[in-house]
Image (tube, rainbow, N blue to C red; front, top):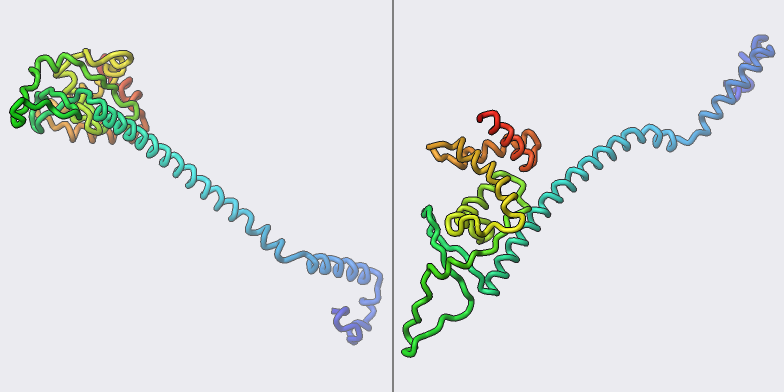
Length: 241
C-alpha cells in the first residue's frame, strides 16, 4: 500500500518506521514481484499437462485396439484372396472339381474344363463324355484353410466349402483319405476334433447351427484360439472314456 500511497498519513506512525517493519516490507514486496513476474501462460500449461497426458493414454489405447482389429480383418481378407486365387487357377488349368445338388447328402463328382467339348460329324450332337468312374480316379489337390479362426468358419469349410471349393465332407465321401497328403492328415485330424464335438452335442436333433453358435460364444468368452479349443476337447474326451 505504501508503494501506491507513499504520502498517506497512516505511514507517519512510529510502527511503520521501525527496522522490523522495514525488513517485513522488503520481503513482502520481493515475493509479490516474483509472483507478478511469473508467466500466467506457463501456469496454465503446467495445470493442463495431467489432463493432456490422460487424453494421450486414452488415444493410444484406442489406436492399439484399432490396429489389432485391422490386423485380424487383413488376415481374413488374405485367406479369402488365396481361396479366390486357387479357384481362378483351377478354372484356367481345367482341373477337377466337385459339383453337388443342394440338399443332397452324397455329392456327385464331375469334371470341369474350360476347353470346348468335341462335336460329332453331324455338327449338332456332342460326343458322349467319358464314364464318371474313370473321372473320379483323379484325386483333387485340396489344402485345408490355415486362415480360419472361428468355429462357424471351420464348420462352413467342413460342410459347405469355402469360395466355391468342395467341402471336406464331400472330399471324404468321394475319395476317402486319398486327398489328404503331406501335412494335411495331422491338420485334418486336429480340426475334426471340433467337428466331432459339434455332432456329438447336436445328437439326433441335428441342430448343428445352434451348437456351432454356442461353442463360438464359449470360445470368445474364454479368449481361446481354435488350437486351444481342440486341446481342451481332447482332454475332456479322455475323461469321458
